[in-house]
Length: 170
Image 1: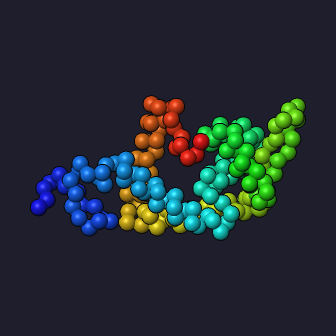
Image 2 (image 1 turned 90 degrees about the horizontal axis):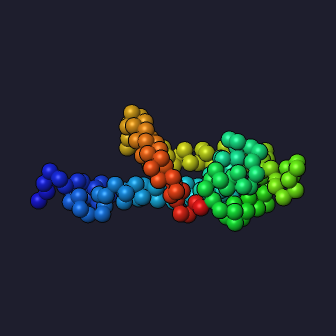
Image 3 (image 1 turned 60 degrees about the vertical axis):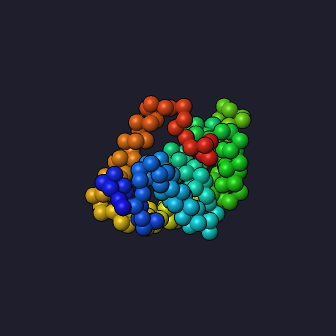
């Protein structure tokens, strides 16, 4: 027996009461994010990338050259994590480091031609995942979904700037 407050959860094929975790907004967002991340990671693996590495390559591409410190600040990652990721990208030939004039310890990070090409391939892979996961939405619904996510993200960042990065990305 269902009532007007029950919700139909498509992946279970049953109606559930709103008190169940499967209908909490946070749970649903987390599950969708997990699907995005998992499927994206699977497609990035043959390209030698992970979702965090793709994020860094994307940040560098938009605003290069960057120092490791600047990259870490923009990505919300600590120095050790950034150093490990930058080393991995450099060893793969996707990233070049050049000394910064006037600062012997700093290096400017720039994508190589291979890095730019890999970013293009990875972006296509990520777009394919998005297309697949949002296929049940119309174009208008997709636009509204993205607008709502942006509003939620902006509102949270404004109200809670100290925790605007997911734990795994720090």
